Image (cartoon, rainbow, N blue to C red; front, top):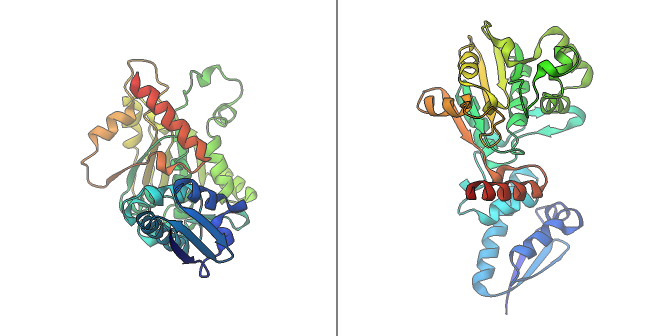
Length: 317
């Protein structure tokens, strides 16, 4: 039986292996034919030569990633273990830099390769479409980039909007004024903002109109100058709504559109404005499109499996 010794003294073994050795257990599960023993800052691995070479290659990739980003979890490990090259799980170092220093010192930055590519794409284009399933961080990344643009005075305001009809509920049948009606639908955006801006400052920004949250219908007739505009849940826009929204773009504006074509709540036979826009604008210079997938899910690992299971059933149907 061959032996491989790996020195972890330059990393933090406790962080690298995770709470209660969760990451180490994940490694053992992925390499069932190897015997992996970790003590202190040394890891000893026993097994077949070919398997040891593969293990060594993967662990060095992980250590390199950990050395760059000071983080390691099961999602990152899974991406490294299933990748064919560094490009599959990493991207340019700059795009992984901190986007925003959030509340209580929380560091907010891109966590996956595609999220990092999304940051790069948003730097280069004034209109960006971020497409992907639930949990891939589309909205969160959009809000983070908007807050950064506001802090760096690249824009004067942030405008966030979304179609008001979803999951069979029409706002006209809900009680309360417009803000009360819209707030439950805008919760993911509020949650993201609360992570990034202290409560008092956020309230002040909303009062002064520096941050505006409004239904899509309220965009009609406006020209959105000097604003970072986020259209969330864009898969639920109609042709007319999407065209109206995209043509509101004013001077020094950034448009960030998120959506999941797999979660359309429009009536049957109504074509999604998002799907149409992706086809129409795919070759337009200045428009960026980023497709996130299951590997970008940054919620609980089970979310990834849930998405895959549903996708399998939908494909069969």
